[in-house]
Length: 285
Image (cartoon, rainbow, N blue to C red; front, side, top):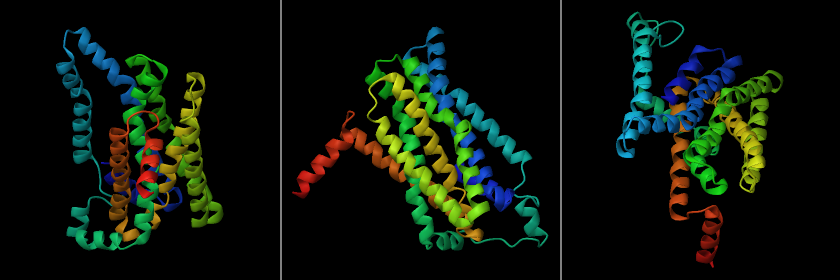
């Protein structure tokens, strides 16, 4: 869904504002991660109040996001256009557009080294967001002794920064382009992803909740700015293959997410990364 959206916004908006458009659409989509962290535990408690045990309660709660996704899908299918000129089927039938070969387009995008560089860079921002969304509530519960509901609310701060932060990254990318062209977009991308890494290290050292929460907010802001800056560059990699490039870049998320999940599963606890590095060093020795 994300990849389709990024391709859609890339062709719907002019290149001078495409970074902001891509970032805002994706950011408000990712905002759902924060909303989920905040609301789903509350809905779960509501189901328990109605007398459902845990085994049934979480299944009933899934009806809420499932129904929303189904409804939005139906609205898109019946009321949206493929591009500013209308629907592709109509344009191809009238001769105004030529049908593209998806396999050739994918091969073209796959042979472009820039697609794979962005694959790795995007993995280091949105992949980090996914792993944080999946583990923050447990982390706040274990590290700071918060209840399930309060831990969910604290964890939701990370996703809620999508309300503005990803758009801010896209806007910064567009401003960089205005003054320095593509080099300006690259400078912005480098700066925000560097700050993301620094703040991740700082957050991992926080032992007081009052310091951890503002650090988390800053860290999350630069994570999402990095995501927005990434898709400020994607539409320029290869115009005719933008959809395929978006797909490759988006797949980077799965790569790092699976890697980090395996890390946390096999090296549990706050020092998971340190344990992994030590064991790797011992094997090398």
